[in-house]
Image (cartoon, rainbow, N blue to C red; front, top):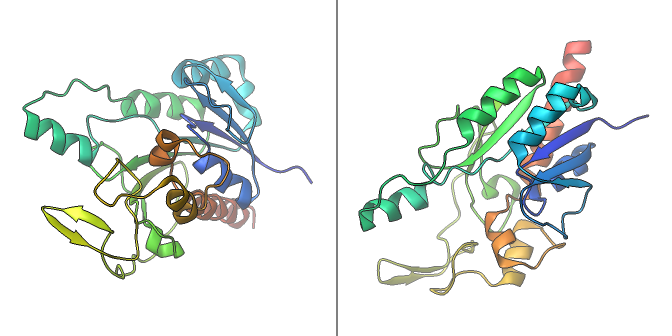
Length: 230
């Protein structure tokens, strides 16, 4: 039996892709940067140009689902706070809206992923590492296009994220998988906390989402398709 195929746009190191693979998908990625550690076939190039090409040629029809994690530094909570404190303007590019436009044009079900912040997406599903017993919190929001599922309950956090904050050090069951210093996670700690073993590049780890998130989303999508068929 053929496995359904997902297109993983803005794929980075493959955290999202690996989760879909565990859910039962074959995965193709696309990222503008060289990603030699990406664990699946991928196209190196501009994700929106590639998506437009696949739509124009009809090749998009080989996919059952499209996942996109477009950069939106203008809406990221961390960047917004930094920009405001430094008096900077919104110089970052927001690719969420043009990504959605193309995804709607594709006619396929899709997922748009963004961190907490001001990115203009529907928060149809919000996931947190505590939902999966992970060593990071890493809250992420997901807009679902042309399909739906029920979001899981958000359990109470078991404590603090380890590190310095506002001049005070706190220990806790979670590590900070971003930045450097101040008690933030080492590369091995990030790998263990997010269950990502195929890359040890700090920049890739700090941008990655834990595969547990998209494993849950991919499973929910396949379940929703089966329910429609029944």
